[in-house]
Length: 238
Figure 1 (tube, rainbow, N blue to C red):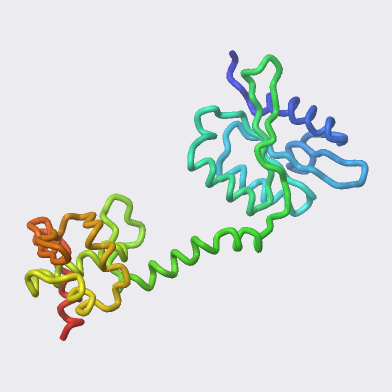
Figure 2 (figure 1 turned 90 degrees about the vertical axis):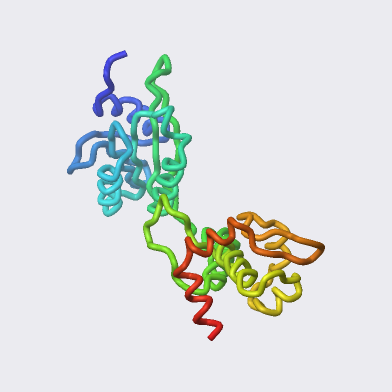
């Protein structure tokens, strides 16, 4: 199979536009493909071998004069199941840019309408993410301070969950063996003390008898690793 060129995308795009009632012409005022509908609506299609920021920027510019704007690229069977591609689709959806992909492995080039050029419903998007927004607000208030570096990718993130477990570990270090009730009294802002103790995800403490806990060797190491946060605990108690 010969190497695909951008010009190879034109014919299948032209056929698709004509099948949707458009008269089609190419290369008009920097627009790769222009489809004119009987009602006067203009469909602009930018042709590119690969989906990238350059062609997205071009499509945004075309929206100034076109009623509907699409990007057409060669179908990439490896990329289009990836999270990165799904994130790009979300961006295109918000920009109201449609996406066509062309499968050149078929007997005749076949167009897939991956995304329609349609108005983006911001209110619907916000409503669908109410739970995620609620979790974000809850996590924000669960953390006592800002202990992470923005942009970190390969480091442990100090989440609210991790911080609460660390605070329990510190309390056990300071007080020795404690009951669940005593930990609650010492750490009243933690609403999931029993759950954290039962899960014991980090193995920083252990149950020595029913309802009583003490710090472990892993817990001692954790207090050393997060010495800066432990210092905050100490200051807040004074």
